[in-house]
Image 1 (cartoon, helix red, strand yellow):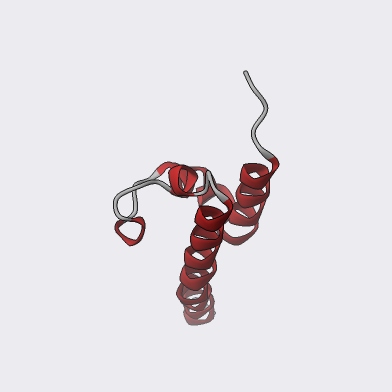
Image 2 (cartoon, helix red, strand yellow; image 1 turned 120 degrees about the horizontal axis):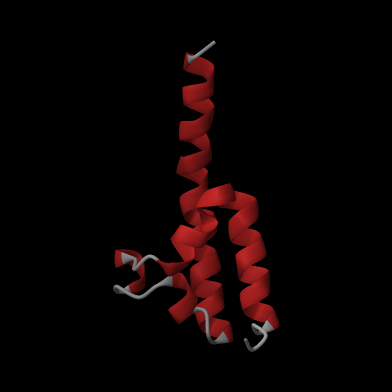
Length: 75
C-alpha cells in the first residue's frame, strides 16, 4: 500500500484530535458543505486541505458545546 502524502496524514491527525473515534467516518463521508465530496477527496491539494480544515474547525465549535452541555446536564 502506498504511503499517504504528509498533508493527508496531518489532516487525519487533526480530525482525530477534534473528533476522536468518529474521525475515520468523517473523512470518508460525503459532505454537503464540500459539494458532496468527502474531506479526503477535497484535501488532495493545499487549497482543498485548507477548506477541509476550516470546515473541521468550524464544525468543532458547536460539537464541543453540545458535548459540554450534555456532560453538564448529567451531573
